[in-house]
Length: 120
Image (tube, rainbow, N blue to C red; front, top):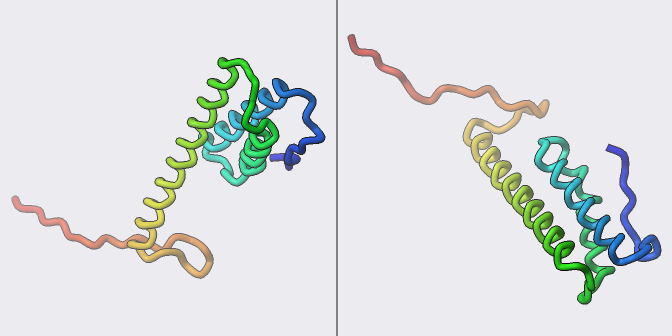
């Protein structure tokens, strides 16, 4: 993914345009998070969202429909980040129970820790 510039107050043309960019950035971050691609690629997009909200300040003065769309996008991004964190925590528990990683960074070989009995 190409490097994205962090937004600055000087680059803002209008509040509605900033709100449009804010929502578009959050949606793009959601696409990255839900695609399974490198989640770190969405960090600049989320940083831009935070900066856009800072620039907009307390009085956003936007249409209710626009505000609701931004809220919905933020909730979706939050859910995706939370889901990814939960998955990673679970994966870490599984890997640590199975012996972790080798010195080369590969998963350690999985070994069966049980037995199966057949009765005829």
